Amino acid sequence: MTLVYFTLGVVFFLTLFFLIRSFLRVTLVTKYEHIDEVEEAATTVSMRLVSAIQAVMSCSVGFVTIYLTCDDVLYDVAPILIPYCSFGVPYMLYDIYAMLTTFQTQRSYRTGAFLPVFKAFLKKQWLLTFHHLAIVLVGFPIVVYFRNGKGDFFMGCLLLTELSTPFYNFRYILQKMQWYKPTLVLKSTILSSWCCFSSVNSAFPIHVFSLCKI
Image: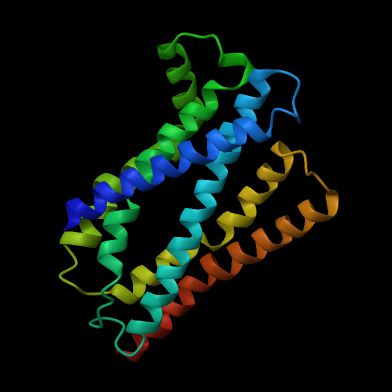
């Protein structure tokens, strides 16, 4: 079943990206003068929207996992966790593709050959690319195959670190859609900072408290 969920994840994220981009290519024509600008905006917003949707899904699964496993944080099992991890891990590979595609639409790289553009992309985004590949090649096998069904609660806490992602992406979406308003950007920045602090910085105390209950 892992392969089935993995395949569904690949199809879901790629299809969602292409559908949103196709829609935005039509709707953004009136907002930009040149077709290259439309392509850049449509690709960027599509990438950001898919990222936000993935983050909402991740946090939802995280909350459900924590709720189902809070009684025994070491041995309780959340049936939704492994299927979602198998479904969600292709997002990391998709996101590398989406980031590269967005990078290619930037003015400096629109007409360049693929290999120099790819090298420039890796030079600029090497850390995020490494992070995504590490999750796929190291993190995913550990979560699915080497935990022996233990610690679902802590995996749920880890998923909650995506809580700030929708608000972070919201700023870029506002800018590219030309809906930029200082008050909205300020609110999204405050919410992003608060969510990042509450999700990431609270994870360690939650883990310690949970382990003290064992």
